[in-house]
Length: 181
Image (cartoon, rainbow, N blue to C red; front, top):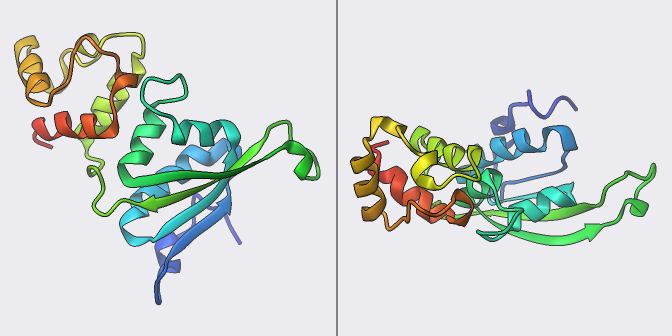
């Protein structure tokens, strides 16, 4: 018993495998608990969570859809995500105002990329300025000149006239690797 944000999750991952994390995530801290899970992805075999259906939709969203965002990219860089089922509010007492979904997160071995400061900066830049092209969203990032950004994007096979929501986690990983860390 205790606060999931303060708990030492590693202390519970001793002993024989498989190591799994499971829970019904409180809606207000779902993002922070998913971040903790991403940090532990190399040490676990799966995570099974009940989350708000809207969050589950974001986790399984495809690039180019309105649900696709930074949370999708960060999660999918570390995990394969499967939505198992959705439960309507009437399945619970007291009845919540929202539906919930159960998702299974299976760690990628190896992950698409490590969540480096460069990877985080590129993803946050792209989704923090969602309506801007990548050329404008990433302007000045890492101290790159316009020409350097163009050269790195070309080498990473990224169109700077695209928007961030069109890139898969692999695309962000390729350009993050060009930043040197």
